[in-house]
Image (cartoon, rainbow, N blue to C red; front, side, top):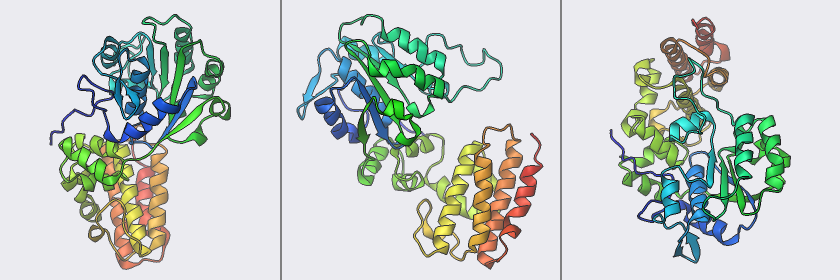
Length: 369
């Protein structure tokens, strides 16, 4: 399956927003936010980064278009072109190393991938990166329209990084704005929260998200939206990874038969997440509730909740260590066999919680690293 790569991160030359559902929040931010520090609260997969980049682009735009009374970025001026090319001298985007590689937005001192041996890219925003940002903030604006520092997501600022940022958040140089994003404000230090105005980006309506996904070339988008809890960008990422509606629908029956091949080519975190969702839906059916992630007729209806609970706890344990250097093929096979036993125990309504999950637990504990 080939999906159009047209889901951009900012306004292009056509002046169109990268995501249609950010229009109201963008208008609100441009029309009401006057503070120098803004914290954007958005669920994962709802478009926090495209929204934040579009807002930064609007603040730096040298022309601006008028739409609904709000000043949107024009997408055609010199400033907008520099943002689109990721080289605007007055915009500093600070992402953890994993996201810098994913979005091709490196820092100046990043080494090419592979230059540091087998070191895994960091998932945190590190203190030396924040200090580099602070040094940049105090330099004069290159184009005279202010400066914008964007940190996404602020949840991954470690304690040192967050503390280093406090003075800049409280008293940045004139004309400088600091924009942070978070999926959960409770994960942000209170000292950071107290220095920021807050803005909420709502999830898109299902109909709008489905229409947008269809425009991106995703077939049966409602199935992938259900798989991703209505998060359109997560659904698009799933489609781009080759998991279409048919592949997703094939998971429950294949897992129930112990056929691990249904996960061929899937990374371990995605396998664990998918099995978590299948376990959730099996529990829901056991309680007489509707399923969330899979079609109801694909999930066993007769359930022994203790067996499902044991399976869920084992998945939780593996999820906490998804970056461990497992032998992936053996791990996925063990996960699927454990899942098949749990689902079979559901059909038999086996009363012992440990009987369904313990063989899988033993296998996972003895897998070669």
